[in-house]
Structures are given as structure tokens and as C-alpha cells.
Image 1 (cartoon, rainbow, N blue to C red):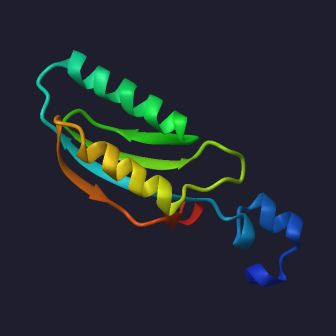
Image 2: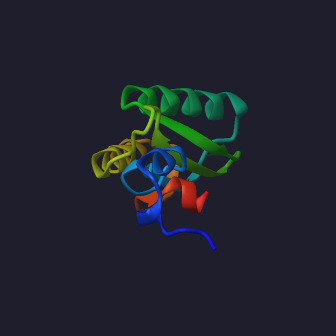
Length: 112
């Protein structure tokens, strides 16, 4: 039988990223209206620079249909609702992005 999270020691909760040490992030699905690899590379480079400026890291991939997961690049850090909104606004301002599906903040260690 596995003990509930409240019965685990602080050290173990930290090691397992549970309770107060949970790491939150969000997913983004988008469609790009680009036909060249250069345009895709340019978009990805700019997205990475934007994410880095907010101390976020990105995982995922795709070519035209892109699925991404954003999380904090800081140890034991989490993406925030402000980060989520900033990413949404940045993507909506881009001409090459036509469809955006933005997920809610979730515990990345239990979902992915």
C-alpha cells in the first residue's frame, strides 16, 4: 500500500515533486501557416527566445500542427497564469499562427 502524500516526509515529497513541490505548466496546440522550413525555424527560434525571457522551457514538436508543453526553467519553479496569458498574447500576435488551443495549468509530473 502506498502512503498518501500527507503521510510522506517533506524530503520525499520534494524528491517526488508532490504537494507544495508540485511543478505546474500548460500545453499549447497550434497550427502554423508556413510553407518553408526556414519560416518554421524562425518561428521556433523566436518562440524559444520569448519563453526564455520568461524563464520558461518548452517541450514538444511538430511541423504545421505543433503540440507544446511549457514549464518553468527554474528548479522547483512553476509556470504561472501570467506566463500562460503572455504566451497566449504572443502567439495571437503572430501572423503565422492560425489556431491556438491553450490548456489550463496542470501538475506536469502527474499529467505528462
